[in-house]
Length: 158
Ligand SMILES: [Fe+2]
Image (cartoon, rainbow, N blue to C red; front, side, top):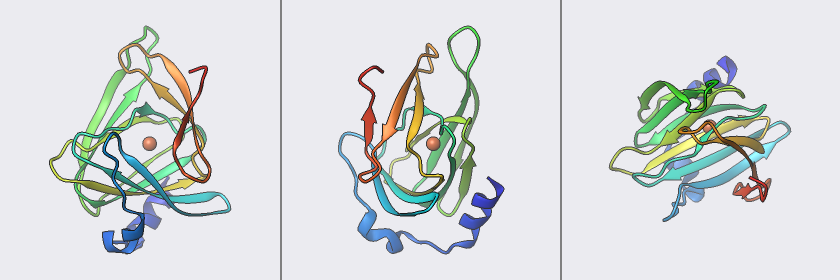
């Protein structure tokens, strides 16, 4: 994770550089794959105010996030033995700031601000299978991201 964090600190990426990958969804945040290579992928995620990710982990992928515009709010959770999950941390990241998550880390990303949020995500290896959590009950269900479109494919058994 230190490597990902360091890489993102060194790259000089601005919103204008990924303009063709900026696309917002009305219903939920939009994942826009930019490019990928052996063992990594770059995704631009666009969030309107109020849009939020599910509580999720990364199942074997490391993730580095650079905020290109707006303010990202990350909430970190831990599972507990009796069901409801414990919220163990919460922080705001502003334009130019970076956070990194390892595969077992469980978090939720949201745009709790009043302006649009644009974030750049580096995953290694590419993020395919994650677990989604219901923070109130601790219930878990699988989710797969489509390799090409980057869109979620919800498990029919989930
Ligand atoms: Fe994540």
